[in-house]
Image (cartoon, rainbow, N blue to C red; front, side):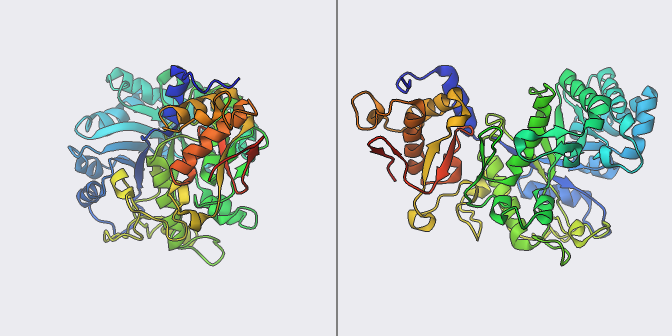
Length: 460
């Protein structure tokens, strides 16, 4: 019998976590340009936008001094070309940390050091120096008693994966696993740090536009994709890519390592062959992503883990090489004008609508606008997730669950999946039918036909 009357405190707590507010949005402050404002003006711009996290690609003294006293948390970078020295000489690591971190902290709130950037694709073959460099930098922090407040990690690109589709098949490249991936994950575990990941659905869409629906890439309303390997349903490519990395870590028994998305974004302009690049799509991706992060919840595979995401990038950078898109990932032009208007804070989310899809990422649509849809339980999610979602919906979610009590209209069939479907759908309809109201930690998904369980049809 489905236990929908007695609410398990532990399961209820887990279900609350799955929909709680609490993600964090930061921005990458790249400077490969000759027309950018001063660092002092950049700090003022960030504060005016309510952004309190930034990642930089070096340790420029003018930048670090400008952020002093700002209250903005910063992730700094040890460049790839310095990995060899940091790996080979503890004295160099100690000198580097003293000069570039300790000299500014805590007035400048440095919260993390990114050791290298996408090292595995570095043409200078610096991979073997990565973990030794990370260890030496961390040891330097220990000696300065800063290891408790400053984390050490290294951003990896999705190219570190050997397979990423479906998400459940996520696996790291076999030649990297023993030499560097496992030692790096061991280091992150030992130091209480997190994996930094650079994730760009744009590039996946650009290369596979004939297969990947644009709405799926932009967090817009779509039917979703069921991962046959784990039974979870995905409504956006970003979640699918992130879960591929989580699955890769899980395959190596590192389920306890957290993740920060250190780069993600969408270009507002591209060459003729760069499918999907454009202002409208960039605004949709970043705007819907911000809403996705700030309204809480993790991914289908890790529903209780809030996301920290750094948008790429703050400015368009006119000196970057490569296709046009490389110079047009910015949220702002160098003069401080917005490339497009999207919210960057929880307050800014109020009243925000993606022009092409008012319901994207969980916005509420009128029934006439979205057609008839229902939220049903995903039987493959497992009893624990279904029960947790059921407990929440019938408890804190405020759903009237008397109809699934013994002797009532929708009691039969007396199965957890049927009872959960009733509760999930009732909560979904109560919240106006937004995608985020039909998640329950990956235990539910949306259908466009009215489900029927015995004599009980789920209400609309």
